[in-house]
Image (cartoon, rainbow, N blue to C red):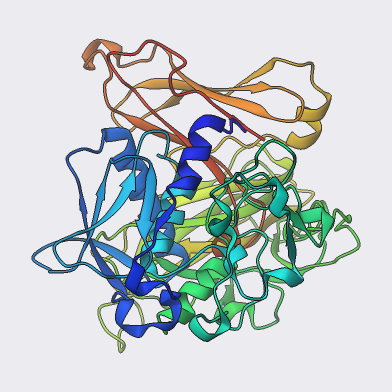
Length: 508
């Protein structure tokens, strides 16, 4: 990716601020912790683009941890996020009247905002752990003069590892060349395969989130509701009900496809093929049975915890049946624990042409009370050689992506395409009717992401120029559990003063 080297050095140098009287790790000081609801104020110095990025970082904290950033009302202690000189934060909670966190020029990236907020929540860098010498080697002679203290360890007397292993993927880890004087890397990992992993600009890792929850004595999430990959026979407390001879079945392969579940597609973290692993998925066959036979796969009851009344259901499906078969997504809301019938509403439907691969799908939900999600499969008229399969279900109290562009075998496409090849997405429409298109420029080992407005059906009724709208492209990690994903994302904001290229980004 575009490392923004000059600014990157500045960001690291001004990363966190020490207080002379609080030089120990705040991890072990209960008095410097916030409550799990952290008040914040976005300063007037922040531009629109930065504010959007910060709000996205808040959403990631809510998805992966119990920390909930809330707008400040009249609290004495709150985080005051401003655009000051660089990116930095104090470690822990110290100051009434607004404690500064700076998201300065060049710092408006989700992983940087997460990094600085983790400082504010009480965390030093990963390579400051007192056990770090078992995992990395610091090359002191390669460190810029005057910055050696940035590589000091925090004593075991003043910090806690929170019973977690060293995390090379932590968003709090320096990269291999941090503060280098030009003579080579400053950090060498004891496991060579992680040398190019440390300091990657991705997002908060699952271990970062685990440490955060342990520090704040909680194990819940603000916005995550449920996940199921059907690896356990309990089906994640889901139930099945059928009006056909087959119904939903937990299988590892199905006639007509798929021949593998989605969870174990591709390769594992060590680069080994996953085809030798046989996971499970749910399958409804439409090969036999009567026209409009149906079966339901129903989740456990869940109660929304946020006031936004927005949920997102995401899952993978494999469609190998007849084009008239249906997969209907319903929610059933209940007025009380005693209510056994509830009110049922259709939220989405999948039908049409089958495809010989797992497809990623989102369904926006809007439950306002305790609810269940129902996957209803129906056999349509006509012959079938397969059916519907679902796997890797995730449900959260977040907004669904507005569009999904699934590119099959992308790594192969990236590595084998001519340098500079451009892939064009289909035409998409924003919620308010603007037509746009995503462009990926393939550059062998990395790619550039661009967005362009295109003519659409509603142009005559829209306001032009299109100012101060933000679009985020998220390159989705393939981990089946959404809380464990390490996905890269880049956001672009339209500016009526600028022409083009100002917000283009590259991704490794």
